[in-house]
Amino acid sequence: MENFSKIAYGIWRIHELTVDKVYENLIELKKIGINVIDTADIYHINNYGDSEKLIGQALEKDNGLKKYFKVVTKCGIVARDTKVKHYNNSQEYIINSANISRENLRIDTIELFLLHRPDYFMDFEEIYQAFKYLKDNNIVKQFGVSNYNSIQFESLRYYLDQRRIDLVTNQIEINAYTSEHYMNDNVFYLKSRSIQPMIWSPMAGGKLFEDNETNKVIKEVAKKMNLDIDTIMISFLNSQGLNPIIILGSHNITRYRNALKGLKIKLTAEQNYQIFKSLTQIDVK
Ligand SMILES: NC(=O)c1ccc[n+]([C@@H]2O[C@H](COP(=O)([O-])OP(=O)(O)OC[C@H]3O[C@@H](n4cnc5c(N)ncnc54)[C@H](OP(=O)(O)O)[C@@H]3O)[C@@H](O)[C@H]2O)c1
Image (cartoon, rainbow, N blue to C red; front, top):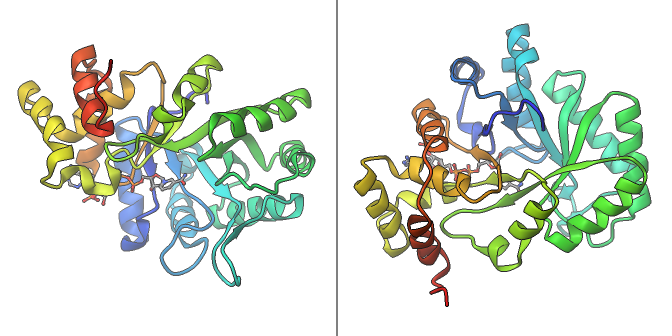
């Protein structure tokens, strides 16, 4: 993911905004060097694709912005107009989704296209054929997945790698309330393969700012260092040898400035473990 900024603009919560406000945010983000937008086909409280459309309309206002931003989108979850929520990673579904997203986003090529969740019934050959078609036709530049554990990632990566398609990222949730990827050793796996993860909900969707026991430790570290809690959380996520791209979900540009500050701060081993302990409730041996 060469030339991707380390902080990304997540637009899961974009439905509250107008096109003008999104446009304004994109201009401000460009000024501070953030060039990644993260979205998905299913993002919008009302209709599939509405978040992509909003971004598309904002990008359409300025060709410079369209060239500058790298858009990441996802496919594979079917949650509406169906008897049962399910995943669909068939060749036809993937290709169709990429074309719809590209249209919604008003861009020629999707920079990075992710399979949103591990589909237990996925046929690797169909995924390969879909990715090959999207790459050969310049519809997608790079591919990745989201919410995979290490075995799932390695299995698909191995199959695609044999056929010269790279999986460049696994977008996973890590925050003060989610320790799954430490416990299942996904973080070790990603490091061993030099796979750059994208981290979603770094602020636990805003829960990090509530007054409670989990947040107490981060607040203490932040107070001691005279920094904001969000800056510390970004330092924590960025101080673990993962080299992540961290996706914030805020529409407030100050939070992005705080996050950039966090990239420059290296926490001590003790501070990392203080936060880790509050996160996992585990005392290391
Ligand atoms: N791959 C997946 O399965 C998956 C799943 C979920 C999300 N995502 C991606 O990850 C992105 C980020 O997720 P998220 O929205 O949950 O991110 P988040 O950054 O953890 O949470 C954003 C929320 O936290 C609040 N917040 C941030 N800083 C704050 C502060 N200093 N004080 C008070 N409130 C604060 C924001 O409110 P304000 O707007 O007021 O700042 C916003 O409501 C999504 O947009 C999406 O692109 C991916």
